[in-house]
Amino acid sequence: MEKILCKAEKKAESAEIYRLNEQNSLIRTSQGKIETSKTGKSKGYGLRITRNSSTGYSYFSEKKHADKAIKTALKLAKMNKNPVELPLTKKTRKTKTFDKKIQELDFDDLARLIRRINKGTNRHAETLKSQISTYIVKVRVINSRGTDLQKKSTSFLAYAVGKKKKATGIDYYFKKKFSPKVTEVGEKAGKIAKKSAGGKPLSFTGDIVIDPEVLSSFLEKTVLRDVNGKKIDKGQSNWNEKIGEKVSDEFNLTDDPFLDYGAGTTSFDDEAVPTSKTTLIKKGVLKNFLDNLETSRESTGNGFRSNYSSTPSIDTTNIVLEPPERENVFDVKKGVFVKNLSGFHNMNASTGDFALNIGTGFRIKNGKKTKPVRGCMLTGNFYNMINKIKGFHEEDEQKTWFKGPAIRYKGKIVGS
Image (cartoon, rainbow, N blue to C red; front, side):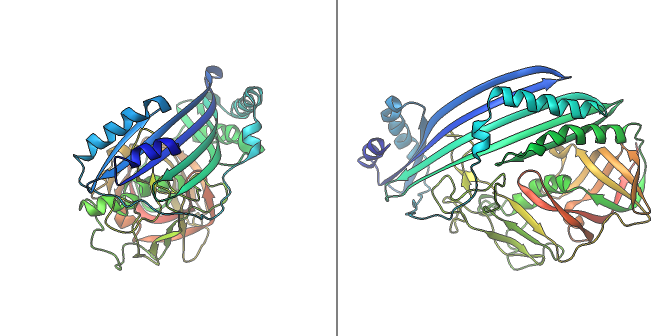
């Protein structure tokens, strides 16, 4: 890498090389039978060059193609008048991202685990789909300012879908640490499907409890779009001029890259900028945006590549919602618990308006979940929702990049 960097520096003002090594194993089943089983490795390099206050990108998978990639990046730099000042980074904070147990799992281990997942689902319903995946990722970033950073991480995904009559139940586990409890996703998926069977539509206005997973999908479509620094610079955010203003109820929302074995935990981003804990919302007031090296503000360490061939874009690490106080949000005389929604791709991200299908839901009566609900639509506006929260649950949940509680608000469900 150093020799390639030296070649690039001779033709440019500054240069950066990003190297990605990935190894993954996967077993996927459909209706209890193995559909896919494979292992794979990939390696490649991302190149960024700045010359004459312009930046160009390119990539290559083999070192013998580096010279061609440098020429391509220089050519593309002529069309991109957005200079990037590369960081000088020597130290980063230690994070827990690597689990040796995941590295040691072989294909036979994965096969045993997925059989246990399917067995758990089948106790209560039919196994529609299941999957187990492991990932081992190594990253190195060097640049012409002397930065040379390396990191490695592991990830483990367990996923199950159960079916009972027309109802489905879904559960999954995705973290950088292995747990024997991953096989419980099958049991949970089967139970959800069984309890959801025979669900009927209803029309309702009143107390609605939103599952943390559903809440995370809403946040991804709206709030996290609004705090994206590139959206801010382009005037495409609803919160362009709202730093210091109230945007929600009095909860805190933080981008935290330091959670132990969190899905997004990392010590530095893919631009070699040290990550930092960034408060986005504090007691309902907008405090900060998420930035990378290409935005008009100082980078918060949120510049990430989806692979070596992509350019850095802004992404979250782990999003944590901290409420001002907690309670049992299910403790109502009458309400509806929304476990799963579909159709988020149709949501109006600009206005926050939504009309989404309830895939899995339950009536709440005197604090207990009772009859299943499905085939109806949750309607409303998400920005209104987060400004009228009536309660935050007493427990947090973290399955992927979001950690937070279920919430209760006054909403509306429209029957079919």
